[in-house]
Length: 314
Image 1 (cartoon, rainbow, N blue to C red):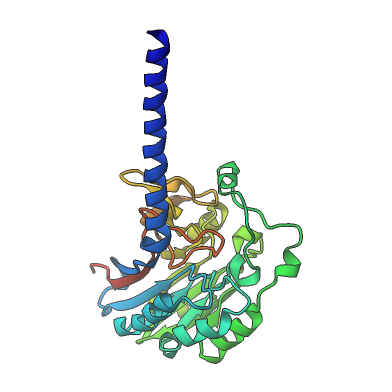
Image 2 (image 1 turned 120 degrees about the vertical axis):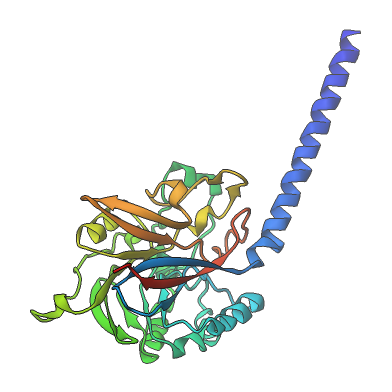
């Protein structure tokens, strides 16, 4: 009698384990074959322009992580030119392979016709390496000791961006005029690699502060120290990527990880960052791709973000 009961319980446990394994396998197959290619555009509206200004369309790209042969992703990137942005902001991690630069530039060619700014991410500089995915729960990912041997052709990519007129904001600031409005940008090199060196916002002339303008801060990885110095220095909009929105999320809960010190509930979307008595809109893109070492998304579709900036009430 006891032996029979034990056999029944073991059989039940085996059935449960088999079902769990099957469900896990199905989720992995869905995330790696389907969801990671379900590209979409998240649209947001922000009333942050000076009163009386007409709307400005800002297209935010991040974490493309292109690998040669990703035809669906390349075609979708080309199609984004149909959004007719006034400005493109690229927050890094465009590459994931040494042979990615040419297909990336081909895919972005229609968008390179628009004004743009960019900063770099760690996977622009260095190729990804295999790692235990559970290691992310111990804290933000670290580069291997031999990362120098995995350097990607980022200089070629940056030169092409610059030749098209896009402005490199890695540890730099610059003002540009878009549709008659002065946009004051500041940006940093990748905080995840601790390359960030904040240079402040453009100073301009003694009278420039009285002209209509908007202060925009850009970084790849949204570490809190970076968000704090942007906010404390008067940013009116902050744009970042890096988190992949968690990449593998729990439905109804959200991200389990942000791969930095940003709270996981901020790993994707538009929130407000508060520091030094100021509150600034922070847009964190869930990104367009994944590391080629972990090509899966679950409950976290890839995205570009179209921000419609409109005038504040007078």
